[in-house]
Length: 540
Image 1 (cartoon, rainbow, N blue to C red):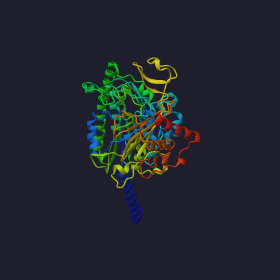
Image 2 (image 1 turned 90 degrees about the horizontal axis):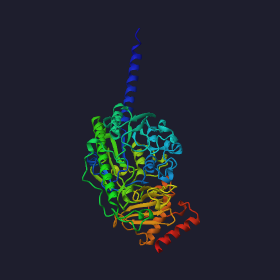
Image 3 (image 1 turned 45 degrees about the horizontal axis):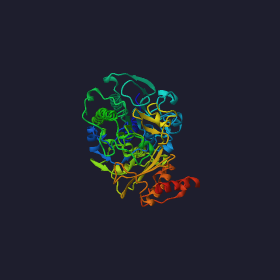
Image 4 (image 1 turned 120 degrees about the vertical axis):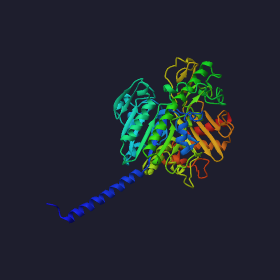
């Protein structure tokens, strides 16, 4: 027996209405932008690190914006990556180096920070989240829960166990071990990351927006190039900048201990490292091309923001330091930052001062997340991306680092005794316990300055005028105007104790700046020591 015609009609109308409503929700979700973050490892920008990436420039920079003043909060992998994920300065996420003891991927980090990373927050508002590559240096360590640990908020997880490699590594595939050997066609990590990224685009849901974070090993050591790129750049050497193979006579003792001139062996070593770094980046260039072409083929590129950046810079021979990062100078703290996406005009260069603590807030802002619900220190630079008028932007950021040293004498450098690390055969060490510093990096209309204080017995201060001295050859701490020195000292104290909104207050060269002593949690004795430091800097 057939149902009454009126019931059938009502049912059909109801089903039609539900279908229309459902379609509207799907179309609304589809209009929400997708986001891709490509993160390289140890890629500088000051020494030509973007030169090999011609396709990346054409596909991202030429279609969007290049930030010429992009910095990291700390010039070391794990603290920097932790700042990217949390949007916080190191003194707030408490990751101080690349060890478990330094809170890198530790159980404490997993409990207090991981649940509140920006990918976890994206996932909470309906984003599919995909990770592939190097996460944190101690990820997968037994003390950190092993590779079975999948951080909260990730829908798809392909994370490298521990530090960067190109062959013979283990991935955590959603918490299960996936071992790789030495076969180029199957195992070369940069290519594997490209392939799993393309796979994700094919099996993801088409009804939800997505976030992808692809974190390459390149150009981190051991600098293993793909076979087809091993003969590239054979005539290239590390740039002979004005601070190359130069003694840092007015700098912190760790820089002064470097041997100048460098030995021929050291020069050959760093030139070879420089070439190999560039060779590994060619595979990153291929990855970017494959990923963006697939997005275009799927008709998703025009609705996708693509970010390209690095976790820190690098040096090769500057101030006679062979190769590493960790130092306060431009070559270690500056990074590339390219962005393309909806409403971003092509071929732009922005001089706005941005830091990697801004990536999380910016990506959340793009996704429509309420930033007031976060505890992030950084700022959203979405208004800069979209060309909003009357944007009021910051004039300074904080850079901080806690030095590492060995409790025993390094056998390659017995003359320096215990307390140093990262030493080379020529007895040049790249780090030490008291290579602990904090800096204010200021870029304002009339000022381009860096002010740094070391936590050491020398009470050492370094100040640079980057307008007159872009390669930081001359420390002007003893000659700069006393008023400017005091202003930057006060600002440093404020930033070192800041959290969330207080990290975004106007800088000392911003007309809106006002100094409130209540923002600095110091006793009278500490303030007295600071005044003594300023007196010693200007009088000695």
